[in-house]
Length: 228
Ligand code: ADP
Ligand code: ADP
Image 1 (tube, rainbow, N blue to C red):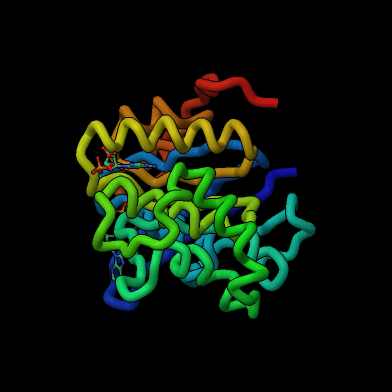
Image 2: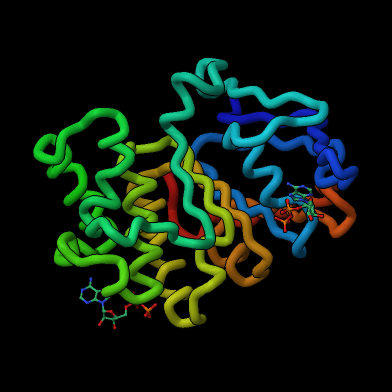
């Protein structure tokens, strides 16, 4: 069964903008799916709806691969990474990555092992005591990724996470992300308008047309790394 299944999802905002129209899509466990399309085609709207951050106007979202329970149990298993790293400037790298656990009542001492493990995944364990302003753009993005991974999500939703970075940093982070995905085997839904990024990263590309929300094609390509 697919992890998440969208059927005929449409979204019209209150100002009349049609962001998605009749979008249907199944995403299986351990897939790395890119949503590719030009600005304004509804990629972020689709991602937010999958994340439970926005309602649909019509259509359904089901989680057959997650016991049918979308939110409640499942929501904690979703990690988000947005284009802006949105780190708290007054907290250290450790404090930023700890936050999702802290909100669940996990003390600093109890969280230490998990936080340091997440920082090690993104190569920043030596920067636990640094503040965001001391870090480069690429490092801040890696802290955001560590923060998204701290709750060990099954599903990682990424909305143009590397768009603000220079090309070399972006390429490095693409490689890091692929390596993490290969190692940990999450399901990833990755919003991008970069053809290069989608081809390089994905096991499947969903191309969305400029006409709002029409999923007009899907391309299946071989995963660039072997998968189980
Ligand atoms: P993409 O991520 O592909 O750039 P979005 O999903 O952000 O596209 O937006 C799809 C369309 O919906 C765009 O025309 C955008 O202007 C519009 N839109 C997005 N959010 C809102 C909102 N909160 N209210 C009204 N229109 C919106
Ligand atoms: P960007 O290129 O966006 O500025 P990078 O993540 O590539 O960001 O890092 C920029 C610089 O920060 C690197 O050249 C390196 O000197 C330093 N740096 C980044 N990550 C580490 C790390 N894990 N350990 C030590 N230095 C690092």
